[in-house]
Image 1 (spheres, one colour):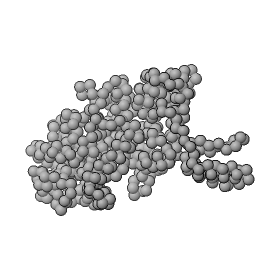
Image 2 (cartoon, one colour):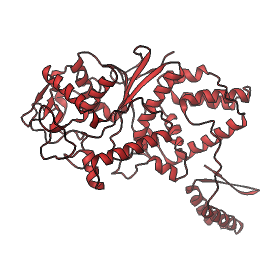
Image 3 (cartoon, helix red, strand yellow):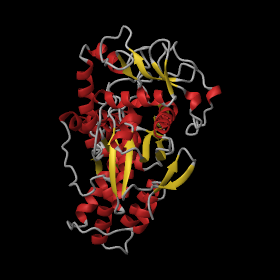
Image 4 (cartoon, one colour):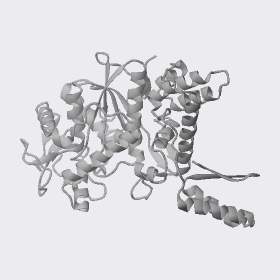
Length: 455
């Protein structure tokens, strides 16, 4: 088999083809104006799984992931770039903001065992590529200079517009939240900015044939993907929120420039909810990798939670599921230690077939759970199979279990609970249990007394 995956454009599961034996993959990267939350990071784990599955089957990958550090408009401050808005809030230079959060992003990817991309081109350092593409689009009649001296893509000239998202041009309403609001110079309400005239803006602007200004958000991915992947992308990856307008506009720009379908497969990861609600700053439920660490949870617990769900299905993450995943990782690592220390790997076709069938990670996990419990399989083979699966799962299953000491505060609560139980103050005992569990401990009672373990 080869990896087959759901293509948003055709609404079918299709095999991933390669270019000269290698899969060229482009993954839309972060806008580096704040730390990425776990919902954002789920997309990059998806990209990593695709890469690892291809490589496990003997293929190779060339992965490019952009860094958006200009051109993405703020949802909180109307008409202002996200980088400039955050720089103003933190009273720092916008490029200082970009580099700081870009560094945080790479650190978070490392904690989730996401392998680095082969290239991380930055939008701010690819302006010439964008100007070149915009110039070509104007020459071919797909773009025009508006009355406000900004450059716009002529959406009506691209016949295939809307095929990714299912939107029709005439049904679209102007003023999508990720677009510019001051676009009085365009001819049609669904046109979008390729290059914005600087106007009164004094930071993050560049010279161009159309005057000083800055690029639109969508043009960066077209310019960089076509340049760094030699004008063809085998797999294009992003979150479902990018399907429209970003990927719809990107496809129109790239295909109009080159005159053919430039992307074979469009792959989207679905939304992640947290405890039943969309994760957002306004909802106050944004969860960062640092939040997991502060609660004593292994960041890879988040990766395991992601694996428990299909990536094209919406999932609901909770603190309870994260704590359970943390406990499962600890259990598997203890078993790996009990099964020996051999580094031999045993290939498992059923596991690989699950991964190659539209990344069926729940079935892949079920496979290794079955192996774990099978009394007819030797410990050595169990360990060898887990090592094989971990090439894709990347859960550090061979890592030695962490030995953690409880804090003085936790010990004090444990002692207080022993006294409460001895005095039959059951309500106090339950309250102390709840408090201990909030610190990451799991409490159990038996005839021999109180026991605790890390979740």
